Amino acid sequence: AVIMGVMTGVVGGVIRDVLCNEIPLIFQKEIYATACIAGALTFIGLRMLGTPHWLDTAAAMLVVLLARLAAIHWHLALPRFHLLDKP
Image (cartoon, rainbow, N blue to C red):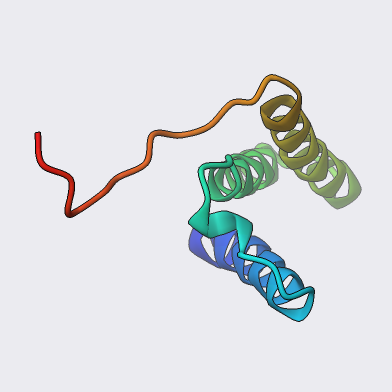
């Protein structure tokens, strides 16, 4: 379920960026997939606790939104991995 949630979030963003003729955010340094993972884990965790479905959905959406807004506001980014970089 976590993988499907992340895939949905990431692929939707890639499709949006391709249609807008821009480089997809997932291929840049921004926190994008990480926010989707956090939201998916929030949703699954709340589902396991037996909370109402609307609360699970709202909390997961809020986690993703806040993670993305925090990354944009404070310029947070994950380190980039370059296969061809030499130490």
